[in-house]
Length: 390
Image (cartoon, rainbow, N blue to C red; front, side, top):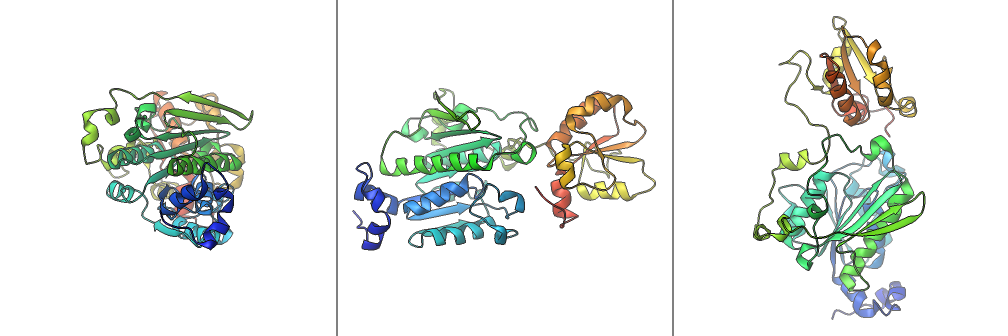
């Protein structure tokens, strides 16, 4: 058994005093390698507590950069971090929390090409991602490498937590969610919001489950789903059975390659689809980029109307000049008065709500109606960098 130095014994003394952990358990933490996938709302508290707990090697995988709208819940980052890569910001913060641990940034994030290789290098995977496509990719890579996944998710005031470990006899993520919901049917926190402190609750619980997995203390949430309602402070635990026909329970579990293509995982993300139609091959495509949107709005020969279907409080934060505000919930009552002789461009925050509005209006006989892909978030990133983001 690797020994703990006097410095480590002093730092982790409150752990060592716990009979369920003790010196042996703390040594296991020192030898452990844990990967945090997503240095965001869940990954922040999970990484902070795992770093403080003395995890020997802590990997941080995230391809994104820090934005101001992250700061109310992503406590790894500060105002000075805005514009930096999340892995760089996280590594700097975690090194201050505990200089005794080894930090490994993965700024490319987890992708189809690197997932299995990276997961193979760690003992426990903490999934702090925020979309179905990433979760399915993590689940499949973990199954192939025999690694447990500590799963967490948040939505508005509600959170979920579980541990997926088919190699230990439990279910996998696909046993709970065999198929992703329809594209665009589940809005992200950028559209519906999330309570920042809720991320702290679920992320901290993820760190706790990882510590239990490593030390053997307590009963891990394998085969159980914990649900948490922050408004009522209620916690429920549901049993999650393994599915006999799931890939994790079949002979296919011996395969060595991920089962889906990059396009398939992307399709499972629940983001609106990105059609191949463009302005060059159809007069009124289902979707256009923000650059194409600007071209249409700037062209005086085009009869174009930009409709913003976000909520008034979102519109007050940032807007595109000339856009007409009609919140999504009010579209049905405004449908009779919408012009049918103009090309309607529909915009929201990321493109999910607006795509549903486009589909609805097309079902009502509007042929010239098009979604603005990426919404005002893409507009700010690509066209107006000084625009407020949220």
